[in-house]
Amino acid sequence: MQLLKQVIEEFSEKEIDPVALSIEREGLTKEVLNSLAEKGFLGALAPVEQGGAGLDGRGYSVLLEVLARHSPSVAMYVFLQNSLFINPLLKYGSNELSQGVIPLIASGKSSGTFVNYLLTGNEITIDGSIIYGVANHIPNGSAQMCLVLAKSASGGQLVLLDKGFKAVNDSRKLGFRGLNFSSISFDGASAKSILISENAEAEIMKIYNESASYISAIALGIGGAALDMAVSYAKERQAFESRLIEFQPIAFLLVKLISEFNVYERYLYGISSVKDSMMLKELALDFSRRASRTSLQVHGGYGYIEDSGIERFYRDSMALELLTGSYTRDRVELSKELLGVESAKY
Image (tube, rainbow, N blue to C red; front, side, top):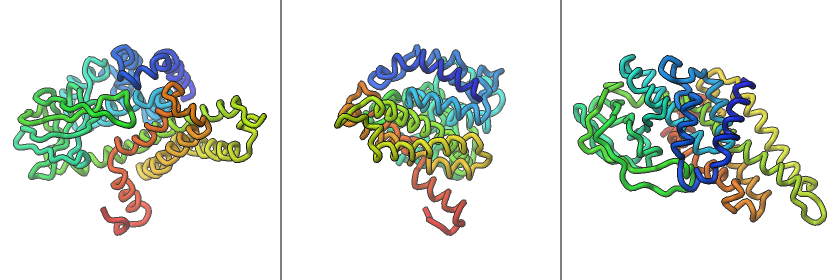
């Protein structure tokens, strides 16, 4: 695991750091996406024979955590391609479908996104194999392929589209500015393949629950990077003839956050159940917000300047929970796991 971490760190320092600010302002470039594809990161969870890296859960968590330290937008793009596109194809698609689609994603020749009518606030319906409706604020909305959980008489279907839909009304947003967010119009789009023909909602919720540890990895990457920057700045910045790190309130707060980070990171790489993942996600999202906010405060006015790099971690930490499912639903599910099925009804 340490060797993998070193490889990803070296890649990030070379390919991401020089353009990190440009990614925030202009979005992910073809050069960055090509570099991710060449390393196998766009197909991290895909089998090697399909052009992927064939990483296990721990290796994938390492990838997301390290990438998030350098660019949360890059980490989120990799998560979208793997956890919410490739993974459902591997679980529910035929071998023929997977072998035809996944290599295109892993190579960067195509990209995918995921639309879940339960989370978009829009009614996306399917009649036969035809999709109707408009989904708003979809990350990577300009993707060439789309997995859609659509509402049907049979309780929901999961389908794959590779044409007939289009991105409209690009959205300006607070966080993850490196990703394109758009509304997607599906009126009259015909499904390429139906992966789950009935009662797909429960299966998709399992996908979200199983991905909780990977969201935790991104959250810890964001919080850890912001925390490192706070420590470095506090050691250099002087006030009242002392360095910031010498003031007990600042030092004690940083020590507490560093302690939390170390505990959460060790827990991340020892996860053995979905319940473990969900518990960590609850804590990691909160840690990410507090660590990035603290870093912003330690940096003072400088932290609010875009060039400092701090403010993007703060913005992305706030947005992270909104892109990874319903935060309320997640807490309800966790309440049922820990308190019983009658608790915190949704």
